[in-house]
Image 1: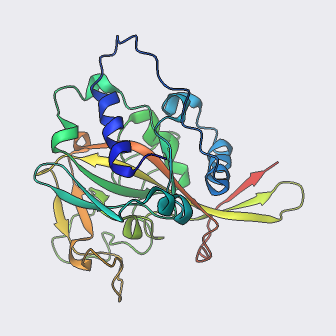
Image 2: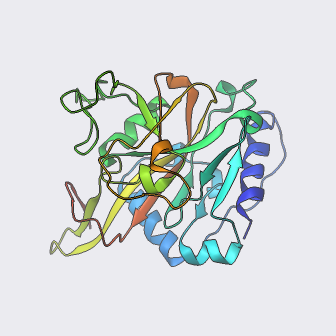
Length: 269
């Protein structure tokens, strides 16, 4: 299993490769982990289509505790210029997205951009993948639904003076981006007998351009420290610059015992 650093470097090698390259890829990234397979089953339930994801799953990665330990990865790495630390999303599985390379040429993402995470609703995934960028509260999604801030996050009616809620919010750690205020959990049930099979939540792993965002303290009313490395004062990054945030991985977490605030059922046949 490739270590995180080698894995990410290979991702950037692919990103920088010419579109007309006739070099043949490997046979794919066959992850046999049971936890990863359960997450993959959930992704299939979402019916997003194979075109959204990288070929042969070559940029998929399992971050369950067993796979993370087997690789010998650190819990944190740095990327970008200036260097910025980000946390490995331990307990989640990543499904690499089909990044449109022609839109990113000349941006030097591999050298300059930072890594972050964006938790989202299940219902928002398809729109994000179709549009290629993250949404801002107030946007109108396909079908006419107006997007709003999640309960638990600052809103126009509950916020400090001068705080702008109409931005894209990301975090250097999934411990924050994966909270209920961002990554709303859903319950997966059996269609035949309504048996609860597992709970799930989703997020995106993204690149974000340095100097495009501001760093804030957490805005979900947390009383205790959320991440062992990052202070609560630097957990939230915000930007109004849509093109400065590029999703490159769909993250899934299942069977979280803390997922009590379930708002949507997804049924498996």
